[in-house]
Length: 382
Image (cartoon, rainbow, N blue to C red; front, top):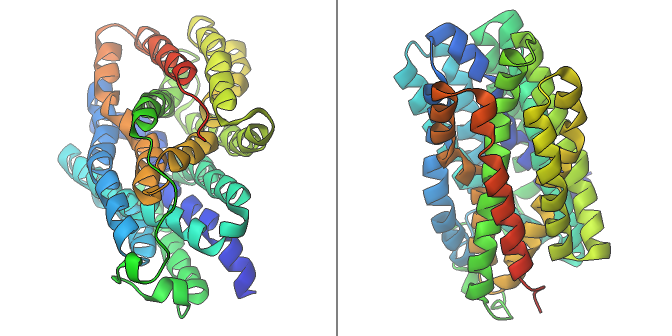
């Protein structure tokens, strides 16, 4: 039993952590209705969630490369989910910003060490294991809005269910991953317990890959925020149904993340990334310029493929380009790959306040082009 949990534990913990990350976007209509926020203020909530994580995750990835800090995993997802729950007590916009920022700290703690846990416990099948890990995160983003949608029915105090989920995750972690040689040496230098990383670091290629990561992250974050807003303001849907639309998008993402990993085994990592960007560009045009229910949902599948199919291949590419610093690479690809786009969200929200949501979403077109062009510049790692 413990062996099975150890195999599927990392994607389960990734799912639990990203419950919180995914729920924030679904709560945006709730914040707008209850606190009278505009689009810029709403997007700033996501900005606060991502700014600390974007700064901290590469540094924490470096820490994970040097020392074993397995407690980062349960501490990370617990901080994330308890922060989301505490929003039920928020009485001001400033409190929401502070709790959103704290949830970002939790995500920053979680991702680098969790990715290395996959390497330590499942190195014999690292490709499939990393694919499962990525799918776990996508599933969390899908289930988070579904759970958070309960606030539209039961009120803000429903958010305490996230704390209950965190406690279950902590119990599962301590049952399966304590008392083992590869997780008990917290704080011990890795150089004294594991072989030195082999291979070389290709910083030039990783630098180019960073622009692909940034492109995908912006696409991911902006769509996560504006799918429910577009559904309400342009499609004229109900607020409670907007979280279901976001859940549908992330549910597709969970399936398409797995498909992207499988496709990369056949086509290659870079070809899968390029294909994702090629499919995204025409589908986002339909999403923006066909403002009805058919354009909204019709474009969602290819658009989701364009965003989510890149997730696994980008993660593997980062670890291959920085073979000696897989923890740092994971902090960037898995961490910044989700959070970095949130830094651009307030500016796009400001555009939506000045013009409209559809005009603001047109910024995704040059961003997608940047990702495509930079992926064409890269070469497959040796």
